[in-house]
Length: 183
Image 1: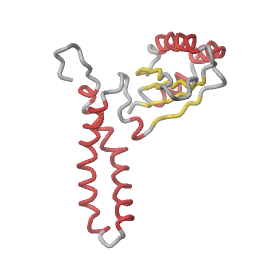
Image 2: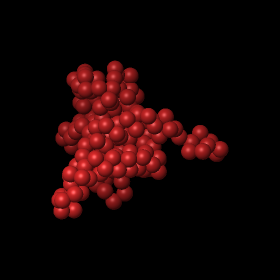
Image 3: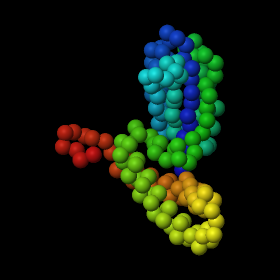
């Protein structure tokens, strides 16, 4: 399973363009690192903190991620980035729901993510409800739904959605090629 990492960087006022240029250069360099599956810069959204940038990185596995962050290329880039940012970046791994649709390509359209999610949620909820229904019958609805959804979320996170996103990856990440495309 690929490993996804989210990084937050606070960019100094007036250094936004220099930061963006530096990060694009680094993405080009880092794309050839062993186990690197891609990176994406997320610029601040209108109305949000204009100095807070996000970076999403994807690696083939934990070992590739650890090697990348221990590399001399990454250390040199951190030094080069120092004039443009305030303090060190905040890095956290992405797991479960937040990483389902993260891949080396740009994120798929929301309607595709919704359709794949629904195709996983519906049968999972049905199956768990059917299997646990008799055992949860005497419980208050609040607790029965809570237990039911607990098992649904576990199955979706570790079994159903990783498989669905892998199976549907070619369709999810296929983008329009022209005016006659059906996507």
